[in-house]
Amino acid sequence: MSAEPAARDRVPMIDLRVLVQIAVMWLVMGLSAMVVGWLVLFGFFVKSAALVAIGMIGPFAVIFLVGTFTPKASPLTETAGRRVGWAALVTLSGLVGAVFYTEVLEASEPAEPPTWLAIAGLGLPFALAAAVLAHGLVVRLIAVGVTVAAVAFGVWLPGTMPADDAASRVAHANLPGGVLLIATPDGYDFPRLTVGDDRAALSYGAGGRDRPLRAFPSLTMGRATGETTELVYRRDHGDHVFTRRVGDVEVTAEVSGQADVDAAREFVLSVRPATDAEVKRLLPRAPGRNDRDVLARFARTWSRLAE
Image 1 (cartoon, rainbow, N blue to C red):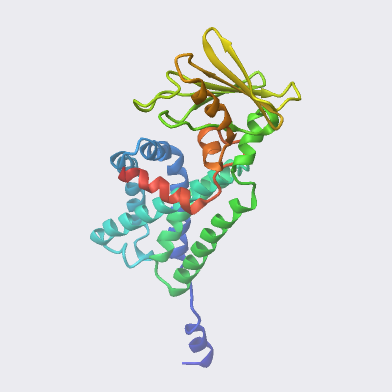
Image 2: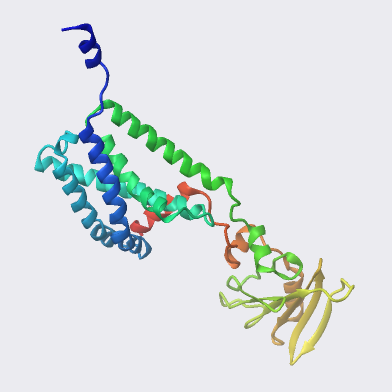
């Protein structure tokens, strides 16, 4: 044997049949996601593992057919029995990757890729899974490297955008004085917030038998119109009404006249700026300020199926 053929034999070659299998897998799974992807998403939404499994029956069959028509591309597609296991591995791995990709897209909003890129991204995890199981060490190493790089990029990219936080929610809500004030009296459930007409109102429902403020106390907040910071008291249709100024906000507490006046006074005096957790509980997320933690979103999505 001449030196030239021997040297060529030592060069790692990529089998064309492997590339065909990967390319076909990428294409057909991207198209399959357009057809049955809604059913899988609905399964996650309603927390039904069974519905997700049903939605993946079609992709599993398509993947099996790809393996049938490209049997020489992987040691696991050479026989019908092996192809079943291969199709199951590719289906499960691809689903995990597609869910991760979906979370990256949602965490990156309001940025939105072109439709063709979104479809290509959904098919890529299945193609990478097939590549990892294909013939050829070079193909496998490239597939692993691309997978690691794609995951790292998907985790990093949303973090470059403004994240959801309490300040953005308060700013978007256009609250009086630009701040959310709250009181959390004992014996009452966490309040409900209503915002409108340059005013914000907190309504309280009884959470137990001990109700020092009696039924349905409320706090109303608007822009301060007076200069005094003194506590002002009056009676309105028999109810206790206390008003105080907190920064640029005028807070009015309305409490049943059956309650002790001192309890009503303590109620309005306990008003304070809401914590970040309380802001996120009361106010909706501002547009374009999604949860940017892709890994946490990914874990929550899968945990829904175990609930």
